[in-house]
Length: 254
Ligand SMILES: [Zn+2]
Ligand SMILES: [Zn+2]
Image (cartoon, rainbow, N blue to C red; front, side):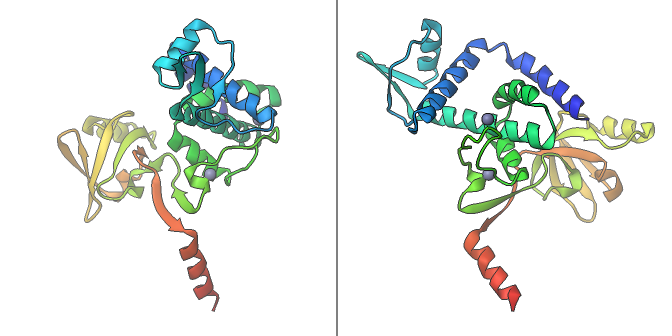
């Protein structure tokens, strides 16, 4: 299963790999972050940069709004700073995931983390961070920049993929796979439009599940609904402020 996951990600990476220059821009931003870090400084927006950057990469970084050229000075923009921060965060969390959970060797971890950082979006990365218990450092002891999931409000995440029965009415999701090998059930579900990649919308849960697929309404009983595994469009299920949690804890103590 682990190797299947990694094969899939490799495939996606090859498709994304066409945006070669974008990746060179990303490498540049990460290099910047690491250079400042090694000097014991924090990279900040508006920093004047003294760098030897290939013309093509420089142009792309400026076009993307990550760097800004004014007269003779080159500086990092706010969005360039945020991109750099996000890439470093993704890379280091990917290292933790690969090394600690998936038992990748040190070499594999290093190679794969470079790929994953371009694949995982902010939402997936916050889920990984929560899964790992909001680690503060990577396996090399370098600091992982904090995400929304790590700060004052505790954000609870569901697994990335859940049975349809876990959605709340009004939620949108994408079908990922069907959890059955029974061919008559499979063809039944497929004929209704439950195929991987299909966007669905849960209308209601009682008395039966009603799902909207494109313009069609489909009714399902609980047993069938449990076989449909979906990725919700948004994955935050609850925001619990630390103060409230503390208060509840105090109350239940008595
Ligand atoms: Zn590391
Ligand atoms: Zn976190």
